[in-house]
Image (tube, rainbow, N blue to C red):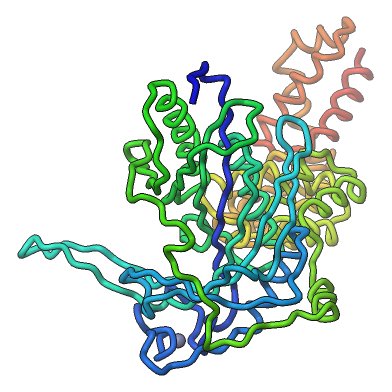
Length: 488
Ligand SMILES: [Zn+2]
């Protein structure tokens, strides 16, 4: 390849995402789909790969795969079947993986991301169904210093979908946006937890570079072992730069698999990449092919919940939210549900949005919790907002009350009572404090009387301070004006 300046190359990325499906049982046996249970407690002859054990297809897994395909604007295959992918590795109990090769359940779809202020489509080549592998734990014997490995087969045979994108991605940032959009969709569908850190949502990338304008693909490198969105971003940035530098230095690139080394911030060559024919795919003889009738596909389509993009749109029109608020409040289905449940109880959509994106998100972030783990329910938030509206507490005091609610799960009323935070709105009760503020601040009083209307703000502040924040600022303001205007 002719050597060009670095900016004359473009990176071409295709992503393969694996998501564990949220079914009750495993893909081909009746074992519970609970990968994190006591090691090897959910195993049977089928998922242990014992000779003679026969697999049975999990119907729900097929439904969830089709549902995902439809949400990704794919066509659903009328004919689909499973294939054996043969390779040897200790996490593969049977010596082969049941996967899908020629006839995936769904194919030829797309999703949209917003990149650089524009809506952009990323093609989805296919969505297929397969089984997960067992989990290996690599240890070192403390007495002999010898390494050994443990196998937990709970994850072996768990249903897994693989979502393969077209090579339509041209930067690490686009890859991150695509992954986020995809994860939000599988979470909305309820087909997967989408949890990357726990490994139930995993991503491999095919990366190559080519001169801008070229339509041919360069030498493809597969990058693995990226365990977070941040890792994907960093690994892809690194790998693109590495390939461009290699070309610039006249070094040949090899088709290989490289692993992301998080601590060193580099990709490391692992093995030369297999081709499909190395796996000796052939139709799985122990399972029947499936024909997915259009009427069946229609019934799956009816299970489709409102998807993130549609919900975001609706939040803008129905609740009058800004695009930003609509975006952050629909990032997860749980957040959007929480918001709508709160609005149902306290019908001030913008106030609810402000409170959730401000106070609740701040506390969730600080304690590293998901919204589902919040001790404050939508009813709790609605109660508190009602108390502010009725003037029982000030907005400022409400923030402290909310922190306490978040920490203890106590109701707003109880905390307000226990802490004596009830706002003082009774003019008679505030009278003395107002008089004291007037007496103690002759300069502000004179300023006000000479026409500097803003001087009253300082006096209100003094009363608020004296009441330890409990005075109702509106009532204080009225009282002050009445007294100052009268004595003028
Ligand atoms: Zn089993």
